[in-house]
Length: 374
Length: 122
Image 1: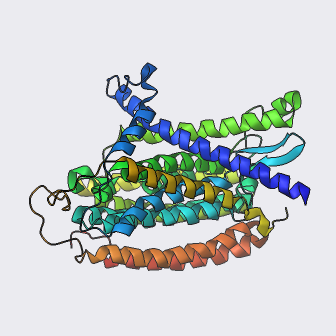
Image 2: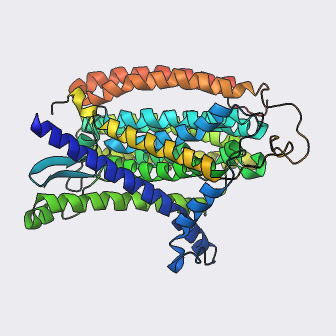
Image 3: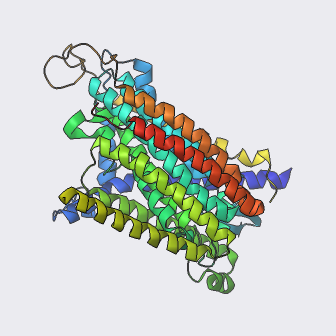
């Protein structure tokens, strides 16, 4: 069948383009992280490789490749190699279901700017992301180094703990959209009905969990250098270490894109209708893809901003926040959202729930403060 | 919207691209880097002084408990996904039923916390 074939080719091209964008963004995130860190600490940052140091990622890549690929003699060799590969593979597989844009027509072929539009969309992301923990755990265990083992174990139990709250915070979104397909979730948010207005609490829970899932500061205990040398990647060098670091940056970009999809209207932007009427559907959709990538990059910036602002948690604080803080909060969020949808006032319920929560926290704080003083 | 199993086909393009990238990079980095091994360098790096034993030792059982509880609660959460997708059709009846379910879940949750799985110093 000819049309199916051309459609498949179009999808393949989209996937490869997204793949290239992801790798490019991840490579340049390392540069911008250093630039932003430098800006926040009143330094210059990398400025030697090319103008403003923009060739720095290339120089880093060459350095990584030329370093000795070290495998400790007591390590399990194949598992040691598999760890970073698995990390990287899971990081690279998630981008397929993210809808980058609406329907476009190029050279007579009409298709969506999305790798695969499947009815399990968001579950695909969760399934792959939860496999990501194996990469770190296998790497940490195979190193046969006590610190690496501790890092790997910490990563595993942190990731699974925050996955619970993350899964629960998605449920409120699904109640609005009535579908697991990422495309349908985005379509339900068109014309400015972004989920963030209905789900402020859900978004806060989700972004905290995203930080924990990406092992980013303030939750980067698996690689906490003051306690664990380098954590799970203590024994790694060369491009294997590069894979772990690279996978983290890819995960940041993808989780930014997922947050944009779930809470910030995906490829929607103010004036979408107007642009579509003036220029046609196809340019409007491409601008939308740009808008989505812009939103994702903004979240990458937030990740870096937080990294250079907040100190690291202690491990028991981290687990306490995940279990006793975020899980009850997200159940509360689901209940408030349910009442809101069924009574026909989702936006009022969303905001009222948020305000009630803040009030409750303030009152609780006041009560416990008095108890502590007395 | 009519979903077909063939919708998943393009994922193999992505899998191939990812695998290709990973295998290529791994082979290249193994070929390019130098290789100079000494007995001392091949030891595990722990704190600079000679390391005692290896890392195949027992670890705190708390991690294991957290993992078990994750499996328990994650399965409960999986039950909520189909409910959430059909939420508007199920209406108030479904809402109260799920509220009861969540209440039971929270009771178990409180029990587990009170039991002290998060008391790391013990």
